Length: 191
Image (cartoon, rainbow, N blue to C red; front, side):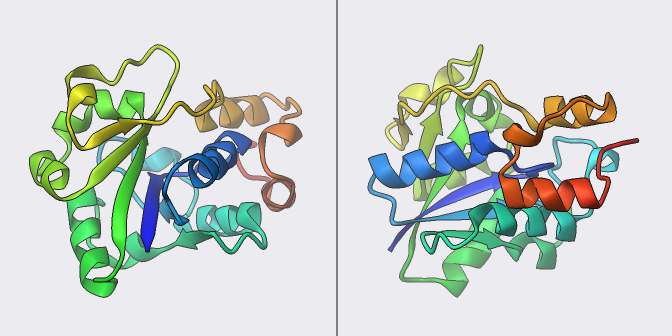
């Protein structure tokens, strides 16, 4: 089975994430998408993150009954901060018959050379890269393991959603409905 791994903080998950996942399933050879909820991205500040269980719950709610998508807490059990190379090794050991592909934005590809053991990742795994505003993917865009997937350009960010919530703006249509209800009832990001 070919599984796309969509890593992220999902702080919160938004419709852009869901559109991209859906597009990848419909327009590539991926059979499943696993949302890998990261407890702590080593390139981001931890203090701005909601608790990982709440972010996992929002992703689970956003996915709903789509059996081709799954919310994964695999990184919750691994040492932190989360390094993709460690997660991939763990997944390969646990699911030896699966072929894993990393899904990332062109903005992340520009910084991929900063990732721990990125050369090792590129030797063993394909990367499906989607467009991001003001990002061209950098030097690795032409690598043989990198495939540009011409997914819709999403100018939506979790950072902007958190900021808008704090400013008491209505962003209900930016977050999948079930995840929005959970977020709203829990008063996340309001302070």
